[in-house]
Picture 1 (spheres, protein in one colour):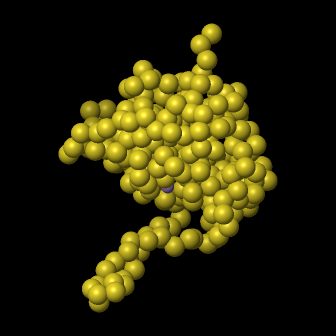
Picture 2 (picture 1 turned 60 degrees about the horizontal axis):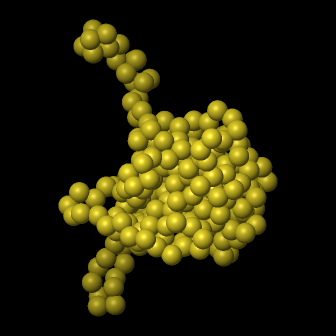
Picture 3 (picture 1 turned 45 degrees about the horizontal axis):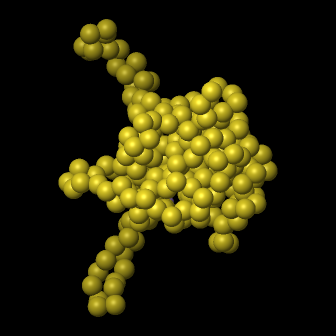
Length: 248
Ligand code: MN
């Protein structure tokens, strides 16, 4: 039987310690190839590069066969699967910072996994909630390995968003927290006195029980199965649309 092929990517860039940590775990399950952005692409969401050609270059990353791409996380997955003639699993991360609730919309880490799912390959996004300390990937690895084993041993959804607290106490399946969106514009001034802006998100408190944000706050590893279909089915049903899509 052919060994399982696992493509590892991220949005923090090819030199992120989180990428190396995830590749180290992946190598316990199969053949690993790393394809990641050459510079950080956090919060790029599911962007793809269409105004210029992309490049795919060999990179040095410990014992791993690795490539850097001058594009987005979604570009990396598309090029990585193309050059490897597909893969059995795509793992994205481990992101330096959580991707919980509405952060999922902006996340390049989740988008890389979603790009794999769009191309028909099972995928999972891994993110680590930071607590002001240096992220301790070495102590996190057993927990990451446990999650990958869980995804491989049981019927897993096509796309899973996984978030780790700094010190995991266990694993829970959760739903996405959608209670509030914290994005806001912050105004400032540069040293030359010019006005400038940051669009930033503030951490939310009081998340709903059973959600991703709640689980990570409780110290659980959060596994959220995501779907690709964004249709609001409840609304569609309320509209009493008949079979031909015409309002009755
Ligand atoms: Mn990132």
